[in-house]
Amino acid sequence: MPMDFSTYLGQINDAVIAENGPNLAFLLRPTSPQGKDLVKEFRHPTKQSMRLFEGAIASPWDEIAISYVLTCAHVARKRPGEAFKEQTQLVLSFFRFFTENRGWTLPALFSILRDLRDLAFDADLHAKYNNQKSDAMEEAARIIAKAFSNCMVDRISPPSESRKWGVYYVVGLILKCYFRVKRISLAKNILRALQANDIPPLSAYPRSHQVTYRYYIGMLSFLNEDFVKAEEELTLAFYNCHIGAHSNQERILGYLIPLRIIKGYLPSDELLNRFPVLKDLYLPFISSIKTGNLSAYDRALDKAEQKLLELNLWLTLEKAREICMRSLFRRAWIASDKSTRMPISIFYVSLKVSGIETTQEETECFLANMIHRGYIRGYISHERQIVVLAQANAFPRVVERPSPFASMTL
Image (cartoon, rainbow, N blue to C red; front, side, top):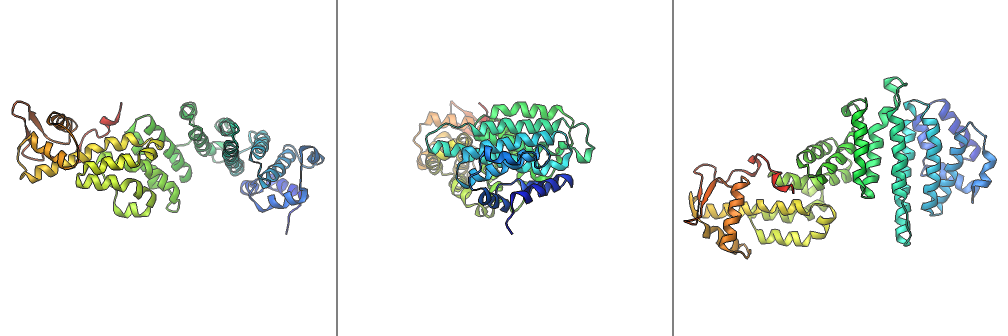
């Protein structure tokens, strides 16, 4: 049965009195069924026409209900910029109530902030398509940051009912906004405040909150070239991600796979088959590493260059080329009956056969780098133009290198 505005106001009031956070969240969601009903009832609502309902229920819920109707109307008529502005008013009105209440309001807070971020995305996209300027996502980040502060300063509520239980969800939304507008440097202030306050350990929060937070910490670490921490956080994010959240797993693996390749761990066929998009991107590199085919690796780099640059992954895959070269040199060593003394010319020829145009001097330089980075155990006799290899474990496993990410930092 369709819901009219009077019934809607009554349900809002009942949810507040009963402190029913999930129900309140449902009532404030533009995509909920009552949203369409209210749009049909008012057809063309305006701020002025809706003033008749001010005072119908306790403040600020009368203002919130009015903003909700206007937001739904703008969404229905495909006016994302206006919908975002009205959702902003709804959120700011909600803050007046949120700061005076306990954690039961968190489900509603999560819902309206998520809708704010989504509407900001739509508003910016619509403006870009129409050659207009919009900073809705940046404005959304500023507003969500206020919610973060409101969660952090709860010192009155009992621990089990504290607004602090919303901290990591809100931080995840803020970081999503910062990454969207490419203002990731702003994350430092949020993370600094997070570390300086007394909140429960991350492990005590819902797993979904943990996964989102760890993913963005992993991404921040990756972009700051702290690859050890990036791999650690992304690994934890992946293994704690819900098995049904396929797109989230794919997003995490998009960065975790190249980091693991650098360490010497190639993804299994089973894993790649579960994620066809990642398989298309990474399989050419993995196949080249397995066969030591440097020219194929270079072709894969050229073909995927634009995509890798967009993802900030080009440097990572370019560095992984060393592993492919190590495979090629190891094959040359095996073909030479695993000799402990090998002419540099053998490796030079192997590069030529692989389609790499180079010189004997460059080949010697490549070998020196291989030895320095721990791919090969031995030394070069420049005078004799030979490589003296260790009798045991001349080509150690890539995973045995002590500092696999050292060569990636600038």
